[in-house]
Image (tube, rainbow, N blue to C red; front, side):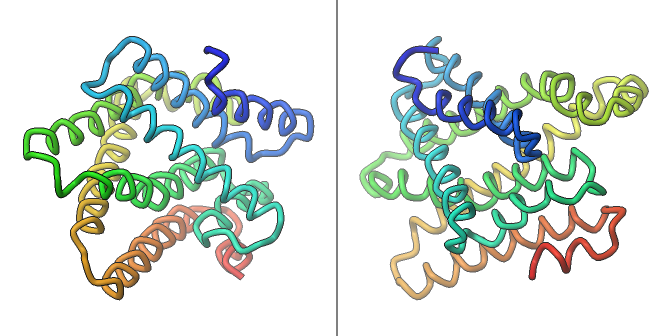
Length: 240
């Protein structure tokens, strides 16, 4: 990490304070910090076709997380999907994987749509099809980095909070990592389609309606995750 990696510095500072306070929000942020570290490493190794563009995307992506967190802590109406993700760790009956997936869902299925569409919108109409495909390939290359990070997330985060999960991992072998990668890849493919759709919409009312649809879809996914909770009333408690 270089001195310029302010994103990681902010994440590490939060993780340190949350660790001391035993704040379970560190479950998602620990995962996010690992993913971000590996993306930064890939950028330093010139792994992307446009490393500067990916770096800009990564920084803007992290910033919207910090904004949502600040809104939540100041009680100033964060996005609903983030309110669910930030409050979920307060419920001891939620599994570590549920807490983790709620954060991943909010950041990918909600945040990434808008960050990606904002960046693409600055240049999309001027880009040739070749360069549009280059942007898409860099977007997809992040999936490879996520897949490579999944094992570490499981060993350092999931197994830490639920040691019994190690047994499941040994029984499934690489199958659980493969399934997780497929789910996230599918989500990110949907994000790309949503972002391009948003860029192509010229009518402001249509854009507003589509943004509302994106939020509703992300909240729906969060509620699906919560259905597996051992606390029957957790959904009502989190969405009120």
